[in-house]
Amino acid sequence: MLGRMDKIGINGISVYGYHGALPEEQRLGQPFRVSLELELDTRPAAAADALEKTVNYAAVVQTVEAIVQVGHVCLIETLAERIATRVLAEFPLVLAVTVKVEKPFAPVAARFEGICVTIRRTR
Image (cartoon, rainbow, N blue to C red; front, top):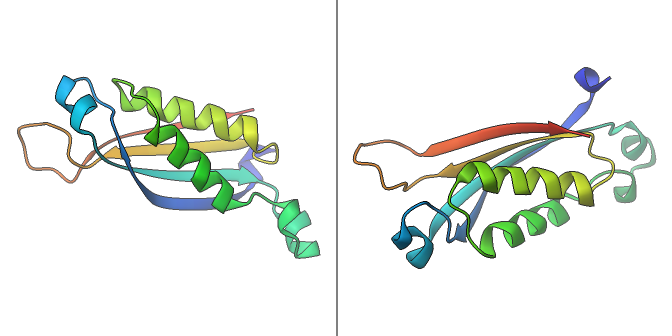
């Protein structure tokens, strides 16, 4: 059933957070980008043209911002897991979520566009 679900994408949420394995990352902070793909059945919302029958993506963005802005973790893997867990807990219409967390300015001695982790979690 999940293979045929509709998808809502929320791309490139930019949030400043204090995550990383190095003490200066946790002290100084840095920007993070989060993208989500929410899997659900959008047909009831489309048929009724009703926001309450789908996922309010503004509320999802606020949830993501709150998770990234509060506290710190060492790994972006942990951050992605927290976001996925919370989205599934707070938005019951979402049957699966893919979360991509990007760290554009990771302290790596190389030229790159960003380091990222992508996870998919289902109910």
